[in-house]
Image (cartoon, rainbow, N blue to C red):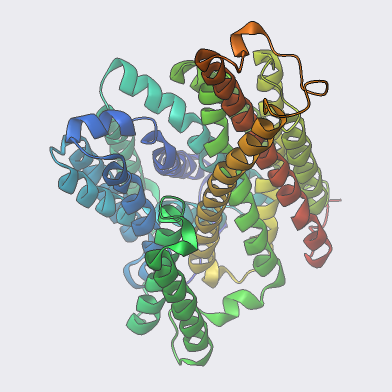
Length: 503
């Protein structure tokens, strides 16, 4: 696919394309989290069990993950604008169908289609922005685009909670209609078309990769509820994922026309960037999963208040991206990544020191710092990863970048949820052992009358407090684990080729 000449795009048209791209990016990014808070309301409306309604999320995630890798091939075969318009139109239409669904089967089917159509929106939008901007403006372009990718999932629960509380869960999907319609009109009017390339589709490679991704996503999504590898289902999914991934890699490096070009991974910056993006996906979405439940279940905030407390995190991300977009041309991008990882780790360390008396002001400040750190990482990382890549690989490269971010988020969420459950049990057992009435009374802690363990009511009250404290300890341990995860990628920074500051 021949790249677009940035010099042929007038500044006014470039601004309109950027605005259109931002709409498509935001509508997809918000949709990754907006439906989470509406699940209990959907469950009641559909008369579904907790496991059944979870398929509303699982079906979307799996379909999106499977359909992300073919984006590069489809863009080359159909033309980027034609594919972009088809995906935005399909995503908007299926959003309307999700809102109008009257049964669990219907909404799961429409969510599968919504995930399939939405899978290419993020990689296509990134590829278009890189193509219409000269190399020296890539940092600013990625900063603008990154606002939607990073801030969208953060504001999603707040927006979803508001729409569900004051309107209906159906508006979680209907809200996509005006935004998607405007994005579709902009794409058809302003986005330039690329040359179409006749290329044979590698059905065997696609089938292997789809089975690997689908099996891994199912294992990660259902692992906690099925007690992980004590379940034959999880073992079968793990074996399927590993086997199909191995066969896909062998096929990719030996086939004449593989599904994904092996040359893509010869670019050192891109290969290291994929590792970085996987970790960023783990940290971003893991913390997004932990913080709302921490605010509601541990600190006792209502759902809407929890959403508004988390919203400033997006402000920190937006501010960081704005600053980095301006400064990236003057300094080596690796320094921004280093500072961003350090700020993210520092904010998570501060969260690991929280108590139940933590003030709202302190929580908001730490959240802003965390958002600022993630914003400092995302823009220079995306810029460096594509700075040395052949433009003809951009569609495939952005698709892989998006896929690894999504896979990282799935792995991270499963990891923190699993550790949360295990740490709750360990902490409860440890605290209960300290409070045992059979311990030496001289060394036993003083207990108020409310927790008198000689009375049934006192035992129940004491157990309730122990359970509450065990939950708190489990969350703090998860935050501590994310600190380590944030710092690990720093060892890869020297491997990447740095950007040359403008003179």
